[in-house]
Length: 423
Image (cartoon, rainbow, N blue to C red; front, side, top):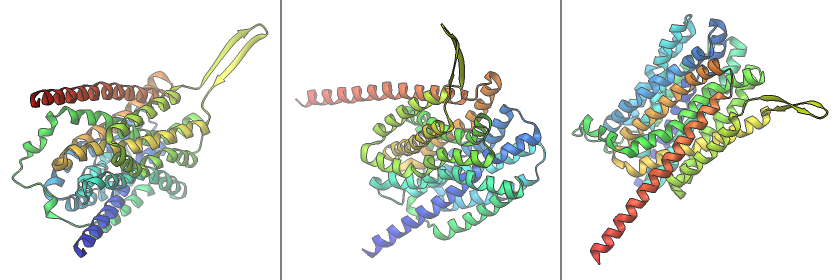
């Protein structure tokens, strides 16, 4: 009995320390979504250049997820996550001294390593809990995505009082402190590691499984879309609705906060109702919401018998924020449900598979801000970012419908064949 209590206490301590660490990592990973606005003004960047600036940390944070997931399987999450966090402290601090555009891009690549923390923490946390509680545990850990909202609360306040150059200095201290706290309150269980006799190539065999690529597509929508919008929404409020940066950041947090915190709720739903059903409804909610958000502010004139009649169609800031809030909830639930698929089907290879799926989601978060900026430069329509997201959700819904329908039919046919042979 005492052993079970101690084990439960360790598991909860690991979960708490890992969630704190991931929250700080995600806060810093998203920093250019806020400090990029004064940097854009100082350097005279266009929309595409701004999108690239915000997206650079996301690139390395995504590319490193696969090796990090595999190293976590092999060496354990505690040492891997601690070293990862420590390695980013100096690059974060140096951003304060950057002056040229390329300085920010290069340093952003190193800071982006913090984004790989998700692929370490997910398998590390999951293995401390029984299967029926893994969805909730991973959901609580994934709530660290709310660091995107934390960034929107902290960074504007620092900028207002001391300028944007103070933000990287404060964030470097935060990262160092979080790394030390994580090391003190986390634990190691060697039995959670994949045996060293398992080769690197053997761990990557899951890439031949079409299910992995399907989950990559889903995650590129719910996580990639979340990252892309978290980086883009502060600027969207500033340019579309003329809010100052502090108010814009608070409104944008109405999307980022539920998109992170409610991931635990998504884990609970996935445990109770199943990953497929939850993910299906998430995609439908996003599909409807992005359709509404895609409509640009419009003014048109109709000739009537009494003369020209002018009509204006536009989403007010209140309506826009309300719909965006719903999207944040849906994406939080969807991020958890996709990883419930993984924990159910890849029990002994969670780290490597979560690394691949996380890579796809992260690359989505890298590509989207750049495409958002390019589409604004090309079309001049700011809501074109939601048009793009609407298209990606359409792809996911079609893929889910036909792929799962095919699998259900195959299962039914197998069952019939088995029955016939038995008879």
